[in-house]
Image (cartoon, rainbow, N blue to C red):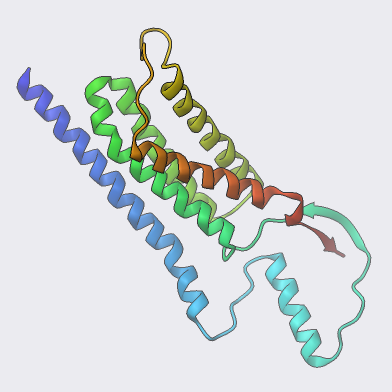
Length: 207
């Protein structure tokens, strides 16, 4: 029985360290190209419709041929380019929250397997979301990020104020420093996603 417990503990710590290292590598892969782009003195290739339109306007201004834009066809929501500071903040915050969940996983696994499994799933989900939204930011991903992190925050508040039903957590747990740090990162993810989905992000598409 002791050998089995030791093996489970070693496996949990291995998963924990793999998640932390994987999260750091994911953030590096995602953010390093954008940091290098900002340092590059050369003009960047347009990444989306917005970047292409800005490039066309700059060329028109330089050539002195800027004219009144044609009538808009229909407005639609657009997502900022990957250089958006709000988007980068959401990616970093989600990765940081995932690292905290990964670090807390082995300790909660000793309490209940379900608790440890939840922390592993939460860490993997937050890492996967950060990688996806950094490479292809869509409204659905932003909504999923906001709702998912809000749900985790709601669950955390419940465990710190009332506990959990069905005997899972009869009394609320104390609030710790890592709890507050993780909640802060998740709040940043929610706020960034809401900002990126807000009315100020909507532009008209020219014909």
